[in-house]
Length: 226
Length: 226
DNA sequence: TAGTACATAACAAGCGTTGGGTATGTACGC
DNA sequence: GCGTACATACCCAACGCTTGTTATGTACTA
Image (cartoon, rainbow over all chains, first blue to last red; front, side, top):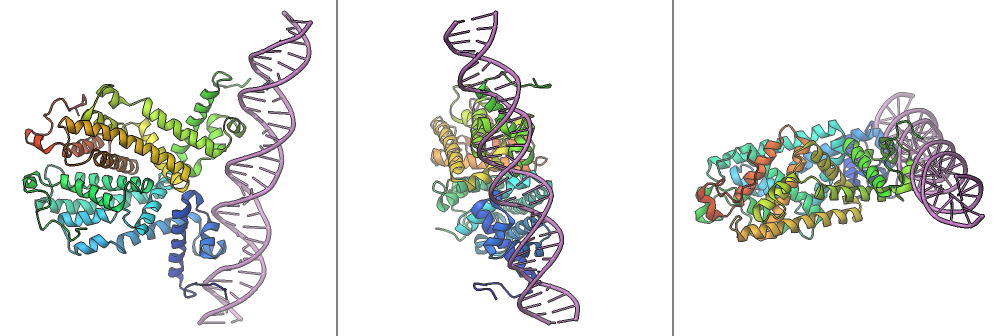
């Protein structure tokens, strides 16, 4: 019986692993990878290293699981923009939503972004982790390329580039914006991030439609007005 | 008297510090921040930790100096594109050159990029390092904003955005491209990086000139052809 | 009674840092 | 020119501490 024990149901193995991973996230957001130690994670949980080793054979395994879970969480849970755009969104609205969901527009997603940026160092030094990351980004690009392709067919995006190039370029743009927003949050507040992304997408519009004025195409605009 | 001593002139203090920093870079590119230990750096130099502590009071001081020097080196030494554009280049050519010089187009600059990306983790966890980085990126943005402003006056860039927004967006784009190129070098070879950047800049062109076809404006094109 | 779920303690290895020792200069009085 | 005096540059050994990992003990559950 622990005084301040907020432990979940005893014996709930998978829930415990997830809880441990959440502690890993907290440590990573606060101290970065250099500060990620088993004792720090255990302290965050109010437990000891013995608990950790009971659920994970090694620190590396713990880390990989935490990153995987973060990826899943990021892909499945919040996604306010993708949700708002509708589950069956296609073309430009879907692409816009996917990009918006990458940006650190809320404190929670900023924490997630912070972890990803932190993990790049460890990943670049560890081929296995680097492979995980490369696969993740490739998957995201493929998804966005499909949206871009649809958008091209709908006349929403310029057709003088391949969907793959459009997706790669768009992902570069938001990834870089994430980095800048993390280092200079005051200079890149959420509104400005949104505005910069919107301007970027506007430049990708089909030049044939450009004469209409760029917000007037109606069906391509998402519900967000702000 | 050391058997294989390739030590520089004895007593050349600053040269030795620079040499130590170069060893830091090598360790960083090969093992990342997690592998950056004084013993590893010393080993890379063929020296001992005693040498390091003779020139630097602490590991942190050593790291900050190495990053500063890398920044200087990157800003002052190679710059093939800025050179090619001419020392008095202005407007779009200058902006293009500045952006090209950030991309990891050669193995050497890829190593440099690798170090920067790695340093983001440590920097985000250390306010002082974060401040250094933020200042660096802000300076680069200011420089590029000046180029963008000139480009606008020359009719090379669209005028419906502020130079600051143009610079921030452009820096985001290249930073993100750097990250993607590091994780998936096969998918983002130098030619593709160049092409993506060129396409990005083309979209930023003044719409008034767009009807001419986008490579034909003559004076804005750098010497680079492919 | 068995087995799971932990805490606790100890381990060797590696860390940044410190201090002592030893060459290799350079400066200077004679 | 030479010997002493001092500073620089560096190696070497060791410090205390933290790390990931392992082994052992103990409580709870079924």
